[in-house]
Each structure stands twice: as structure tokens, then as C-alpha cells.
Amino acid sequence: MSLDVARIAGGPALTQERRLVTAIPGPRSIELQARRTAAVSAGVGGTLPVFIVAAGGGVLVDVDGNSLIDMGSGIAVTSVGNAAPRVVEAVQRQVAEFTHTCFMVTPYEGYVAVCEALNELTPGDHAKRSALFNSGAEAVENAVKVARAFTRRQAVVAFEHGYHGRTNLTMALTAKNMPYKHSFGPFAPEVYRVPLSYPFRDGISGPEAAKRAISRIDKELGAENVAAIIIEPIAGEGGFIVPGEGFLPELVEYARANGIVFIADEIQTGFCRTGDWFACDHEGVVPDLITTAKGIAGGLPLAGVTGRAEIMDAVHVGGLGGTYGGNPIACAAALGAIEEMREHDLAGAARRIADVMEPRLRTIAERSGRIGEVRGRGAMLAVEVVVPGGTEPDPATTAAVARACHAEGVVVLTAGTYGNVLRFLPPLGIPEHLLVEALDVIERAFLVP
Ligand SMILES: *Cc1c(COP(=O)(O)O)cnc(C)c1O
Image 1: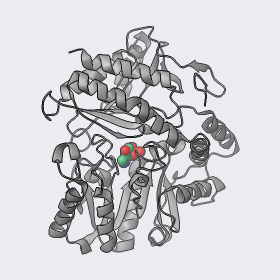
Image 2: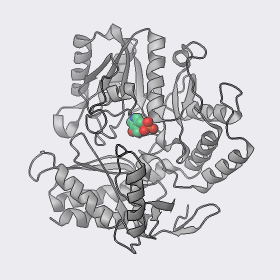
Image 3: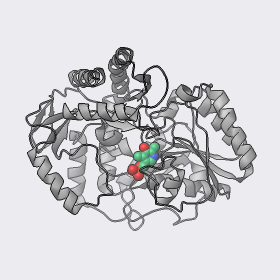
């Protein structure tokens, strides 16, 4: 895929370069920011107040004519690229044919085709069914509904550092107070949190961490009361925490032995992001249910729950659905995006991104002394920033480095329970020269005291 010049279908060709023609943000962005403040709820957060007019390949172009390197993909969404031509064509075709019928009223093929693709691509070769929704949080809510209906049990086990969304049930599942939960309670009941495997901080092996979590479930809840265990195979918002090897397989085994539905939340990790179709694939983990969203549809809102046929079919007819879930335009976009991932082996592209980024990030870690760990998989990489010489989280330096990158035209995101993780989620087709340039900027930001 040649992305030196990414052409937005029907629009301008975007030169793949970092180009700053004003300060960041520029004057037109500042004007728009003032309108935003007057019109948009202050509760809606913001990473970088530059207003975007075009994006593609590895760049975001703003209203002032600045071209920024995209190391965030709109939070792991535009993995196939922004306005990817295949997605644009599929959407344009569909929007001109029909925009909505409601799949529960009169169905259409696109929805079925996306479910077929999900059933085929997700881990495990057992019989599967899927259902489609609008957002990740909605998928997680529905996965829990399905697990409860199937098991006739209520308790749901989630993990420290977990993130599953911002609706009431998913806030309960999410581990972090600020900004996700603060002042928004009471939360949904029957949600229980147990320790994750966090090798950098807990110093124990994956199997030992699994034993610790399982013991908590047994002692505090009783396995026979647990409907589901839900976990991100790599904790996303929690700081790209890769659990110790063996942690996930032992949890799956425990769930299977006790009639508990094992739900993998692959909303951030899925669709080639980690160098395979799904993060579960790396350890051969086969979840009972899997939730997907973000990278699935090239930027259009779509989410799915996929799982064992007998579990997914245990819900009464009409128990699952929603007005917009599996909207035909979003489905067309997903089919275009999935075709793109297959044809251009974007899982391989994610691994190549890691080959470029990981050694550089390790060098930056050595030179700066401020990085406790470089971790992640594929094109889902992060550095955990600490006070030199120990493991004490350093959120102030993390924020300063992010600000410095933004000012230099590189869009990076932060994450982590302690706010001390810089995370990198570039579009999978980002040209290598942009990746290298972004790393140069990141290195400079770390080396300036
Ligand atoms: C983003 C995310 C969600 C929530 O998805 P929304 O589309 O924002 O509702 C849930 N789980 C994980 C792991 C996520 O990264």
C-alpha cells in the first residue's frame, strides 16, 4: 500500500508529512475552541484543541493548514486509515441505496455479512452467533445480559485497571474513578473487582496472579454465583498492561470448569491492532463471548458481541436489539474495512510497526531514565513513565511529554490508572518515515528536562 500520498476519495490528496505553519493550536482552531466552549458541555473532555478538516494515511490536517502525525487513530478506531478509500466507497454506495430500516423491522444483508465475518474471524472454530450494536459500551452491556440469561446467575467479575465504557453498567465494570465514574453513582450492583496481572508492578508470574484472582472469586463470591468474567486481554485505558503469560489461559480454564462465561473485551485490542486479528490469538485463548467495536468499521460507529451459539441463542426472542444497532452504512463500512485488513495483511503491518517502534522506545527509555517499562503488542505500544530510579508513577512528566509532542505536531495519547502512560496507536498503514519522525519528536520531548 503506497501511502506517501493518501487520497481521500473525492477529496484532496494529503501529503504525508508533518508540517507546522502556525503555533498549535493555530488562530482558526482557537476561534473554534471559543465556539466550542460556548456551545458544548464542559463535561466532554479534549486532548488537543486543533480542529480537523481532513485526515488520511498517517496525518491529520487542521483548519490552520497544519499537518500533524496521527499516533492515536482516534483511540484505535481508524486502524485501516482515515477515510480509507474502500470504506468511503462502501459508505457512499450504501448511503445512496438506503440509510436505515431497523434490522429488527426489515433486515438487510450487510448486517448478516458482518456477523458472518465476526463468526469467522474471532478465536475458536465452534459454532458462533453475533449481534450488532452502536458503541463498545453497548456491546459490553449486551454481553453481560447474554451471560446472565444463559447462566441464570448474576455476579460479574471485572479486573483492576479495567475499562469497559461509560454507561451505568460499564462504569461499574470500569476501575478508574477520574474521569469516568466520579460523582456518577450509584452504580449497577453485582459487579466485583479482582486483581489483574501487572508484571511491572506486582512482580509475580501470570499463573500466580491467576491463582490470586481465582482465590478471591472462590472466597468472596463462590464460583456458582458468577455469570461472567470480563477482561481486556491487554488493559487499554488502564495503561496497555499485558498480563503475565499464562494468566488468561488459567482464567479461561477456571471459567470453563465452573460454568462461568468468559468474556474477552477486545474493543481496543481487536481487528489487527496487536499484530493478529485479536489479542486472544497470541496465547490461543478462546473466549466464550468477545466484544468488538473501535477498529471494526474504519471510523463509523459499530460494535458487536460474538460467541458460542448456545450462549448467544439462550436469550428470548426480542431480548437483544436497538433502533440503530448494525446500521446499514456502518455495516458497509465494516465490510470494506475487513476486506482492507485481509487484503493488505494489516496484522502484519501492526507487527512491522512494532519492529520500528520498540527498539527506539527502548533506546529512549535508556537515555532518559524516565521510562519504567516499554510494553504492548503490535501497533498497541506504550511507555510507563516513572520517577527515575524506581517505580513511582510520574504523571506530571507524562503530561509534559504529551504536551511537547502536541506542540511539535505529533498526536499522542495518555492512559493508565496513575495517568503515567503514553500510548501509541498509529493507523496500521502509517508510512514508515512518519513513524520515525514521530519517534524523533517523542525522543526530544523525553530528553528535554
Ligand atoms: C473504548 C472501549 C470501550 C467502550 O467503547 P465505546 O465505543 O467508547 O462505548 C469498552 N471497552 C474497551 C476495552 C474500550 O477500549
